[in-house]
Amino acid sequence: MTMNLHPSRTGVLAASLALAVVLGACGRAGDDTSRTAPQVAQQPQAVDPGATPAHGDGEILGALAAIDRNMIALAQQAVDRHVGASTEEFARQLLHQHGDHLERALALGAKETGKTVEALQAAGKSSVDALAAQDDENSYRNAFIRTMVLQHAEALDRLDRELIPAAGDEPVRQHLQQTRLMLAEHFERAQAVASSR
Image 1 (tube, helix red, strand yellow):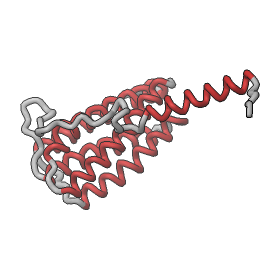
Image 2 (cartoon, one colour):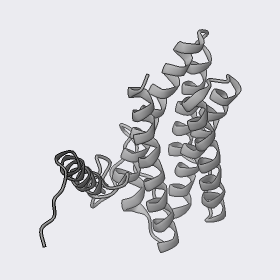
Image 3 (cartoon, rainbow, N blue to C red):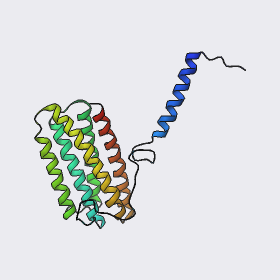
Image 4 (tube, rainbow, N blue to C red):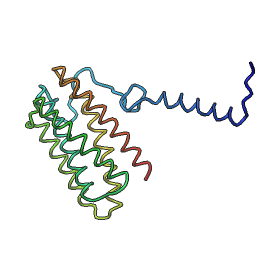
Protein backbone atom coordinates (compact mmCIF):
# COMPACT_ATOMS: atom_id res chain seq x y z
CA MET A 1 0.00 0.00 0.00
CA THR A 2 1.44 3.32 -1.06
CA MET A 3 0.68 6.58 0.77
CA ASN A 4 0.49 9.61 -1.47
CA LEU A 5 0.92 12.63 0.78
CA HIS A 6 0.60 16.08 -0.67
CA PRO A 7 3.95 17.95 -0.38
CA SER A 8 2.45 20.67 1.87
CA ARG A 9 0.93 18.04 4.17
CA THR A 10 4.28 16.25 4.37
CA GLY A 11 5.94 19.52 5.39
CA VAL A 12 3.31 20.24 8.02
CA LEU A 13 3.60 16.70 9.40
CA ALA A 14 7.42 16.95 9.58
CA ALA A 15 7.23 20.36 11.27
CA SER A 16 4.67 19.07 13.80
CA LEU A 17 6.84 16.08 14.69
CA ALA A 18 9.92 18.28 15.07
CA LEU A 19 8.01 20.69 17.34
CA ALA A 20 6.75 17.80 19.48
CA VAL A 21 10.32 16.51 19.93
CA VAL A 22 11.61 19.98 20.88
CA LEU A 23 8.78 20.65 23.33
CA GLY A 24 9.17 17.20 24.86
CA ALA A 25 12.84 17.92 25.50
CA CYS A 26 12.19 21.25 27.21
CA GLY A 27 10.83 19.79 30.44
CA ARG A 28 8.97 21.62 33.18
CA ALA A 29 10.50 24.33 35.30
CA GLY A 30 12.91 22.74 37.75
CA ASP A 31 13.14 19.43 35.86
CA ASP A 32 16.52 18.06 34.76
CA THR A 33 16.09 19.48 31.25
CA SER A 34 15.11 22.93 32.51
CA ARG A 35 17.42 25.91 32.91
CA THR A 36 16.29 25.94 36.55
CA ALA A 37 17.20 22.30 37.16
CA PRO A 38 18.08 21.70 40.82
CA GLN A 39 21.74 21.81 41.73
CA VAL A 40 21.42 21.17 45.43
CA ALA A 41 24.60 21.44 47.50
CA GLN A 42 25.81 18.37 49.40
CA GLN A 43 26.38 20.44 52.56
CA PRO A 44 24.53 23.61 53.64
CA GLN A 45 26.35 26.81 52.72
CA ALA A 46 25.31 30.22 54.03
CA VAL A 47 24.11 32.47 51.21
CA ASP A 48 24.56 35.71 53.19
CA PRO A 49 28.20 36.76 53.59
CA GLY A 50 29.50 36.19 57.12
CA ALA A 51 26.34 34.33 58.19
CA THR A 52 25.96 30.76 59.36
CA PRO A 53 23.55 28.57 57.39
CA ALA A 54 20.02 28.23 58.71
CA HIS A 55 19.84 25.09 60.84
CA GLY A 56 16.97 23.17 62.35
CA ASP A 57 13.71 22.68 60.50
CA GLY A 58 11.96 25.53 62.36
CA GLU A 59 14.62 28.06 61.33
CA ILE A 60 14.71 26.71 57.76
CA LEU A 61 10.93 27.02 57.48
CA GLY A 62 11.16 30.49 59.04
CA ALA A 63 13.53 31.58 56.28
CA LEU A 64 11.14 30.12 53.72
CA ALA A 65 8.21 31.95 55.36
CA ALA A 66 10.15 35.22 55.16
CA ILE A 67 10.73 34.64 51.43
CA ASP A 68 7.01 33.95 50.97
CA ARG A 69 6.05 37.09 52.92
CA ASN A 70 8.42 39.19 50.78
CA MET A 71 6.93 37.83 47.54
CA ILE A 72 3.41 38.42 48.86
CA ALA A 73 4.21 42.04 49.79
CA LEU A 74 5.73 42.74 46.36
CA ALA A 75 2.84 41.06 44.54
CA GLN A 76 0.21 42.87 46.62
CA GLN A 77 1.85 46.19 45.85
CA ALA A 78 1.76 45.39 42.11
CA VAL A 79 -1.94 44.44 42.30
CA ASP A 80 -2.70 47.63 44.27
CA ARG A 81 -0.90 49.66 41.59
CA HIS A 82 -3.08 48.03 38.88
CA VAL A 83 -0.13 47.13 36.66
CA GLY A 84 -2.50 45.48 34.18
CA ALA A 85 -2.49 42.63 31.70
CA SER A 86 -0.04 39.74 32.07
CA THR A 87 1.96 41.45 34.83
CA GLU A 88 -1.05 41.82 37.11
CA GLU A 89 -2.17 38.26 36.35
CA PHE A 90 1.32 37.08 37.35
CA ALA A 91 1.18 39.17 40.56
CA ARG A 92 -2.16 37.57 41.47
CA GLN A 93 -0.68 34.11 40.86
CA LEU A 94 2.20 35.01 43.21
CA LEU A 95 -0.25 36.19 45.90
CA HIS A 96 -2.22 32.96 45.77
CA GLN A 97 0.65 30.46 45.54
CA HIS A 98 3.02 32.14 48.01
CA GLY A 99 0.07 32.57 50.40
CA ASP A 100 -0.61 28.83 50.26
CA HIS A 101 3.08 28.01 50.78
CA LEU A 102 3.33 30.43 53.70
CA GLU A 103 0.40 28.67 55.42
CA ARG A 104 2.08 25.28 54.91
CA ALA A 105 5.41 26.53 56.26
CA LEU A 106 3.69 27.91 59.36
CA ALA A 107 1.74 24.64 59.83
CA LEU A 108 5.02 22.69 59.63
CA GLY A 109 6.50 24.78 62.46
CA ALA A 110 8.23 27.82 60.95
CA LYS A 111 10.06 29.95 63.52
CA GLU A 112 10.01 33.52 62.25
CA THR A 113 12.92 34.71 64.38
CA GLY A 114 16.69 34.72 64.07
CA LYS A 115 19.35 36.44 62.00
CA THR A 116 18.49 34.77 58.68
CA VAL A 117 14.82 35.68 58.96
CA GLU A 118 15.63 39.25 60.04
CA ALA A 119 18.03 39.68 57.10
CA LEU A 120 15.39 38.38 54.67
CA GLN A 121 12.72 40.64 56.18
CA ALA A 122 14.98 43.69 55.86
CA ALA A 123 15.83 42.82 52.25
CA GLY A 124 12.13 42.37 51.48
CA LYS A 125 11.22 45.74 52.98
CA SER A 126 13.99 47.38 50.99
CA SER A 127 12.66 45.86 47.75
CA VAL A 128 9.08 46.96 48.49
CA ASP A 129 10.26 50.51 49.31
CA ALA A 130 12.40 50.71 46.16
CA LEU A 131 9.46 49.67 43.98
CA ALA A 132 7.10 52.07 45.75
CA ALA A 133 9.42 54.92 44.76
CA GLN A 134 8.69 54.26 41.05
CA ASP A 135 6.19 56.96 40.01
CA ASP A 136 5.70 56.15 36.35
CA GLU A 137 3.39 53.19 35.64
CA ASN A 138 5.58 51.70 32.91
CA SER A 139 8.76 52.12 34.95
CA TYR A 140 7.06 50.48 37.91
CA ARG A 141 5.88 47.53 35.81
CA ASN A 142 9.36 46.97 34.38
CA ALA A 143 10.98 47.32 37.81
CA PHE A 144 8.48 44.86 39.31
CA ILE A 145 9.28 42.19 36.72
CA ARG A 146 13.05 42.72 37.11
CA THR A 147 12.62 42.42 40.87
CA MET A 148 10.63 39.18 40.47
CA VAL A 149 13.34 37.67 38.27
CA LEU A 150 16.03 38.65 40.80
CA GLN A 151 14.06 37.64 43.92
CA HIS A 152 13.17 34.23 42.53
CA ALA A 153 16.73 33.58 41.36
CA GLU A 154 18.01 34.46 44.85
CA ALA A 155 15.36 32.29 46.52
CA LEU A 156 16.28 29.32 44.31
CA ASP A 157 19.94 29.83 45.19
CA ARG A 158 19.13 29.92 48.91
CA LEU A 159 17.05 26.75 48.66
CA ASP A 160 19.78 24.89 46.76
CA ARG A 161 22.79 26.02 48.77
CA GLU A 162 21.37 26.41 52.26
CA LEU A 163 17.82 25.32 53.05
CA ILE A 164 17.30 21.99 51.23
CA PRO A 165 20.68 20.49 52.25
CA ALA A 166 20.05 21.41 55.91
CA ALA A 167 16.46 20.11 56.15
CA GLY A 168 15.92 17.17 58.48
CA ASP A 169 12.38 15.80 58.56
CA GLU A 170 10.93 14.33 55.38
CA PRO A 171 7.76 16.49 55.39
CA VAL A 172 9.98 19.60 55.53
CA ARG A 173 12.20 18.30 52.71
CA GLN A 174 9.12 17.57 50.60
CA HIS A 175 7.75 21.06 51.26
CA LEU A 176 11.06 22.61 50.25
CA GLN A 177 11.16 20.54 47.04
CA GLN A 178 7.59 21.57 46.18
CA THR A 179 8.47 25.18 46.90
CA ARG A 180 11.50 24.88 44.65
CA LEU A 181 9.32 23.78 41.73
CA MET A 182 6.95 26.68 42.36
CA LEU A 183 9.83 29.17 42.51
CA ALA A 184 11.33 27.75 39.31
CA GLU A 185 8.00 28.14 37.52
CA HIS A 186 7.67 31.73 38.79
CA PHE A 187 11.25 32.52 37.78
CA GLU A 188 10.70 31.24 34.25
CA ARG A 189 7.36 33.05 33.96
CA ALA A 190 8.93 36.32 35.17
CA GLN A 191 11.65 35.94 32.55
CA ALA A 192 8.99 35.30 29.88
CA VAL A 193 7.01 38.39 30.91
CA ALA A 194 10.23 40.45 30.96
CA SER A 195 11.22 39.32 27.48
CA SER A 196 7.75 40.12 26.10
CA ARG A 197 7.98 43.78 27.16
